[in-house]
Image 1: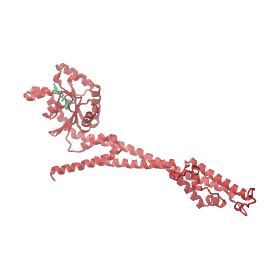
Image 2: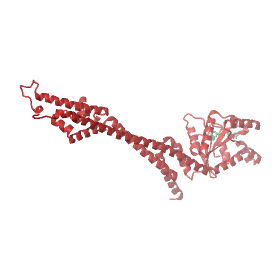
Image 3: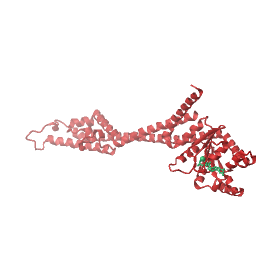
Length: 430
Ligand SMILES: Nc1nc2c(ncn2[C@@H]2O[C@H](COP(=O)(O)OP(=O)(O)OP(=O)(O)O)[C@@H](O)[C@H]2O)c(=O)[nH]1
Ligand SMILES: [Mg+2]
C-alpha cells in the first residue's frame, strides 16, 4: 500500500469511528446534526482553517475570493453564478465559495451556503456590495445570528463592503458605511474593490493595490487565521459541554421517571395484594357460620324424586352455601374492579362475553359445596392458589401492562442515553 492509500484507509476508519459514535448521540438529539458535523470537522486536526464568503448573489463573493487567493479559481459572472460549493486549498487555507443567499425554488443553493457557513467555516466574510446601500432585513438577521455565534464559538465574521469603486466618491462611501455600521451593531466594515486590486496588480500600481482594501483585508485575515486553532478548541469544548449537558438533563429526567414508575408499579402491586388479603380474611370470617355444621351435612343429601318440588333441608342448605359463595365472589370482584382487573387478556377471550371475566376464569362455573369453600377460602394452600391466580390476572390487566411497557421503554431510553453520553465522552477524548 502506498503512503497515500494508507492515509486514505486511516481517514476512512477515523470517519467511521466518528460516525458510529455520532449516531448514538443523534439517535437522541437529531437536531444536533449540524453541531456533530461541525465537531467532526474541528476535531480532525487535518482540516485546514476554512474561510467562506456569505452574502447575497452578485455582491462579488467569488471575485473577492479570487483577489484574496491571487487566482481566477472561482467563477465570476454578472448574474446568479455560484450554485454549488467550490473550494480551493492554498497557503494552508481552505477557501470556500458559496452560492448567494436568495432562496432558489428548492432552497438547494441556500443549503450549500448554510453548510459552508455553519459547518465548514472558521472565518466568514460577510459580503455586501456598496452600491446596494443599506442591508435588507434578511442580511441584518443573518449578520446578527453570525455575531451571536461568533460570541459563543469564537469563530470570526468580517464584514466586507465590496465593489466600492462603484460609488461616486468617498463621501458616499462614508455615508453608506455609516448607515450599515448603524445596522450592524457597529461591526467594523472593511471596504474593498476587486476591480481596483486587479488593475493595480496587473499594472504594478502599488497605490491602487493599497487603495483596493484587499491587502488590509488580507492582513486582518492572517490575524484571524492565527486564532483558528484556539477558537476551534474553544468551540469544540463549548459544543461538547452543551450537548453533554442536554444529554445529562434528559438522562436525569428519564431516570427520575423510571424510579417513579417502578415505585408506582411496586405500590400498585402491594395495594392489590394487601387489599385482596383483607377481602379473603373477611370472606373466611363471613363463611364460618355457613361452614360449621354439626351432624349430617344436609347439603350433601340428594333430594328424592318425591321431594323434587319441595323445599327440603338439603335445598335450603345448598341455597345458603350458594348465597355465601356469591357474596364472597362479589367482594372479590369489587376488589378486582377497583384495581382495573375486569376483562380477560385478549388471547384468553372466547366468543361468550359473559364468561370472559377474570372471576369466571379463576373460580370456574361449577356449583360449590362446603368442602370446596373451606378448601378455597379457609385453607392456606387454597387461599395462596387463588391469590396467585388473581395476581397473575392483575399483572395482565390493561393498565398494568401499559405501565410495564412504559417502564421497558423508559429503561431502553435510559440505556440509549447512557450510550450517547459514553459516545460523546469518547469523542471528546479522542
Ligand atoms: N465594479 C466592480 N464589479 C465587481 C466587483 N466585484 C465583483 N464585481 C462584479 O459583480 C458581478 C458579480 O460578481 P461575483 O463575484 O460573481 O458575485 P457573487 O457574489 O459570487 O455572485 P453569485 O455567485 O451569483 O452569488 C460580476 O460581474 C463581477 O465582475 C468590484 O469590486 N467592482
Ligand atoms: Mg459567486
